[in-house]
Amino acid sequence: MINQKSQSSDIRRVAVVGSGLAGLSAARLLTQQGTSVTLFEKSRGPGGRLAAKRVTGGSADVGAQYFTIRSPEFSRFLHEYAGEAAFAAWEARFGYQQPDGRWQAFPEEPRYVGTPRMTAISRALASGLEIQAETRIAELARTDTQWTLTDTAGQPYGPFDAVIITAPPAQARDLLADSTLPDLAQQLNGPVSAILPCWAVAAYYETPPTDTFEGMRPNHDILYWVANNSSKPGRDDKGQWWVLHATPQWSADNEHTPAEEVMGSMVAAFQELTGAQHAPVETVSHRWLYARSADSDRPGCLWFPDDGIGLAGDWLAGGRVEGAFDSARSLINAMNRV
Ligand SMILES: Cc1cc2nc3c(=O)[nH]c(=O)nc-3n(C[C@H](O)[C@H](O)[C@H](O)COP(=O)(O)OP(=O)(O)OC[C@H]3O[C@@H](n4cnc5c(N)ncnc54)[C@H](O)[C@@H]3O)c2cc1C
Image (cartoon, rainbow, N blue to C red; front, top):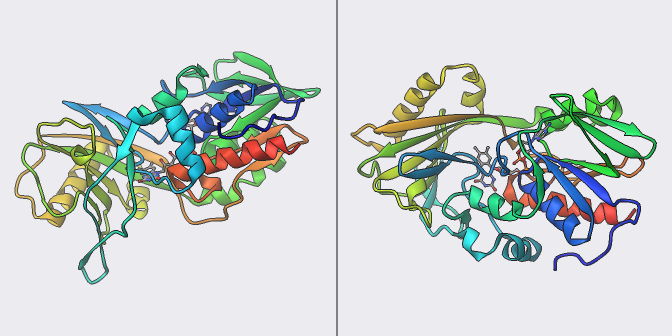
């Protein structure tokens, strides 16, 4: 058990907006305490930026590439709620390129991935939770001490004693502003401007395009990260799916460039980087408007007890997958202190 402490008796029903790792973690921790939780997710399924695209022969992780398990709490949480089958260590060679062009190995640290795809973790964590998928929450309204949520189709949900918002900061700010909570919305102006976009491309090669590292961070104007997705545990591809992520600057400059053109530029940059002589036989792309946060403050979470509103997400705890869990845990702890 992660946290045995029982929650404030006033909070019995909680709405969680967003079912990425932060939302799923918050829901799991609350449910374990006996609190009734409903998750609302605008997409078809849970996971958020733990994302995989279906491709020929399997899937490719177009969002988070791997994650760390540095804290014992995250380790216990994953083992207890996701289960051993949902993730494994990615034992591979990782290198980054210095400004002078030389390559250096990443520091030694265990790196983990979902098996057979990143979304295996969110799928396992979501099991048994009440999730309203394909439901984008447009507004929160307070009546006395309780909240009603309304989706974009005008459907109301509630009442709830508290609301946890785990959307990325721009979407969280819009939701707060549209719910006549301008003071709370204003607090997100800084984090909104720190969010960086990312164009992601997955490219399938029938024969290996390179054999140096499985994961690379080049010093490059276009490419921020490239990885052999097929080298991750549990993947069973005949050839190799490579995932390419563009730099934040290039992604911002090409926000409105057609996907075909983006794929052409990124694949050409990858071929130039690796010296690969042959072209991929299949490519897919995904544009992330909100991928990662630039370095910023790490308050852990935001909890407004008078309003019964909490915010959690990677952007409040250093970005990244483990930060999303840390943020959810710190929010539930803050709610328990009420
Ligand atoms: C390209 C890319 C590469 C990355 N690489 C790594 C990596 O290698 N290692 C690492 O640790 N991290 C990486 N990250 C970051 C990692 O994916 C995130 O830190 C983490 O997944 C964030 O989880 P979260 O729950 O905070 O947010 P999210 O996963 O974004 O979840 C938020 C959820 O809220 C939903 N939502 C938003 N608004 C509404 C609404 N109004 N109503 C209902 N639902 C709503 C969204 O659909 C989404 O599912 C990467 C991210 C990207 C995009």
